[in-house]
Length: 186
Image (tube, rainbow, N blue to C red):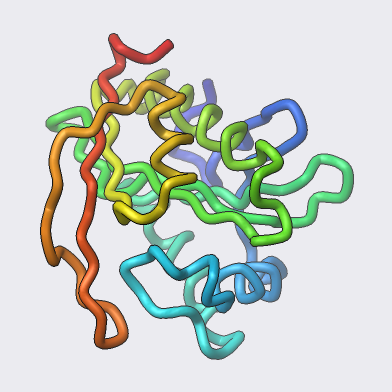
């Protein structure tokens, strides 16, 4: 496994996808994903409204990597390197050997196994050197059945229900908290 002290995140491979470093050239793709109200329906933030917000997102992703607290890859199709989503390890806590996992996928690619591949690659990275984490967590809206099923297929277990955890755009959202221990990972 590649070290995390370089200038970029290591590239991770799955069957059809390449999890890779995001650059400003990817901002239009990120904007298309994160401005879609259906993609953002279960997120704890509102959809992006302007392209410069996606550019700022790329800068924040890169800064988070350099601070060793946030690792977010673009999910790129191997056939054309087009970014169709992201997968993240964030709230990385090396002292307690844990992090949170998150992912988003362009609506046109839902239900085709892309998120499953990307999440699997991110879990493998999290539980291997150099991170060597012992626990991953996920915070999922209880109405996001597809994400809950995907995480449970990877071995995540429901550990709690947090009522009225997020306030987004005038609405209130609950959260299901899930956890996966390294020793439980298939």
